[in-house]
Structure formats: C-alpha cells, structure tokens
Image (cartoon, rainbow, N blue to C red; front, side, top):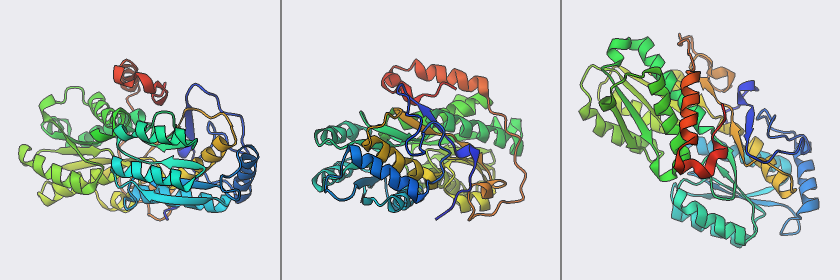
Length: 389
C-alpha cells in the first residue's frame, strides 16, 4: 500500500449545521489531520460505542463496506485503509463490490441487511438508487456514511468537490499557458470527462474544473470546450477522447481533466496514441503516483489521499454508533500534488527534478463560483456540501 506521510495539507474540514463533540476518544472531525489512530484509541472507541449500542451479534461489530469498484486503484486504497483500521479496532468488515452499478449496489445493501451488520460504509455511484438503499437501511435501523457521493439521510465523507475541481481546472489552464504560451492555448481545446450518472454532487467537481479553467482563461472560446461521459473509468475515457480527437485540429494544445485520475489518464493515453504532442492533463485524486511521476504531460493532480479514508471512516462509524453528534459532512482539505512534491505524500514514489509552475489560485473567481452554486436550485438540499470559502 502507498503510505502517505504526515502533512497539514491532509487535514479535514468540517461542514454542516450540527457541531461535533469536542472529542471522541481523541477523534474530532474538525481537527483530525487524517492520520491513523493507534489501536488503543480505536479499541477504546469500540468500547465506548458498545456501551451505547451493543453489537447485533452480541460479540463484535460487523461493518458492511460496499466499494465503488474494487479493482479501481483509488477504491482499492480506500478499501485497504478501512480494513487496516478495522483490524486495529477489532471490527469485522464485510466487503461487497458495487461494480459502478446502482442495481448491484441495491443487492449488496440487501445482503448487508440480511447479514444484520451494525453499520454500513457506502461507496456507490448511481444517485437514483441512493434513496432506495437508504430507505431499506432506515427500516433496518442501520446507520450509514456515504463516500464522495451523498445519499439522503446518510453522513457524508469525501471530496470537497467545488474546491478540488476549481483547483484542478485553474492549475491546468496556468500550466498549459506556461508550457505552450497564451496564443497557442487560446487556439487549443479543453476536454473534460464528466460523470452524469452520479448526480449533482460529483457534478460540482467537474463543474469546478470548468469554472477554474474559465477563471484562469476567461476569454477561452466556448466552441473549443468538449465534454464527455467518462463513466469513471480509464477505458471509457480513452474511447470517448479518441472519438473527440477527430474534431481537434493537429498541432494545437489539448488540455484535459476528468472526474478522477483514471479517467484523466484515459484522455492522456488517447492523445498519445493519436500522436498529439501538445497535451497537458491534471488529474483528481493523486492515486496514480507512478503515472504522475513518469508522464511529463501529466503535470499535476489534486490530492484526495484515498490511503487515509479509513482513518476517518472507522472513527466516524464508531462515533455514530456511540451516539455522538457529528457534522453532516466531513470534507477533505485538498492540495496540488506534482511530480516535484509527490514524495511528500507518497513514500513509494520518488520526487522528480522537474520545474513546476508558480500556481496562483483564483480566489475571487472561486468565491463567485461558490455564490453561483448556492443559488443553483438543484443544490438546494445539499447546501452543507458547498464550502463557504
């Protein structure tokens, strides 16, 4: 497993109308830096939770974890982190694979209910199935926390979508100008891989990428922006980008980003296969460390640090079972990971001796973007997932 080094950049931020308790056996979601708690702390959390809500099997807690898709690198790292924390806490975890499919996620949820688990960590992509799954969980009195894609009535842990997207899009624009010059970039094309099936919350990530790119290049031509449904995978992103390349003239810069690192890599691979030499991509996740370190055109990724997800998710589960008040949403504090600083976050990948841009985050543009999100009627029910700054 990739091991992240301690960094203030991985601290969590708390959103929501409900304040967290100051401390649950050392865990405060408002100040937790994302590191793993010692086993003694985790076992003390289990003991405190059991005093309030004993295990359903009378012996030990059983948590159901429905992973988005187990063979996606990001998801594999999330799963490994959850399992490591659960082992240290003395908790059993039953793992299921949602396979990027809502119907499969529903079947897995029903299996957790039949198994009589104490808690569920849900990582599923189809927003239309979220309410159905939560209805069944509520009837079974099983609390749920959702990863990255919210579900009605569940807690939320994951990406700060507006900020992460805005960072990636604005960094991409500035990097492309630094590499190719403003005149060439203004004749180039911006490609973005979206994920419409997951609903409005992940759309805030790709919308943020678009807004960040436009904030850095406000005069970029509208007809030179191309989007596609990435379906969250490298393979689909490769296929769709390959189709779009026929609409892009030879010899112009191509700027690409997407919902995650894998879909971004699909853009890069398609452009490389087509012989395009002026390609610049920025990922989201930071989990494709080798690609980031070794591909000169993969210039950065906005880090989400999936290796640390379990360090928060298991304490969140135990605090919930203990009846602690938690915020409605706990969001990751992201940072830009480049080939030059990657070893600060991923000890398995060496930092590269490369020049990186002097990145300027467009703060005014971001605040305007947040204001627009708060006015969006489709986001009226998820205002707690829109940061204030």
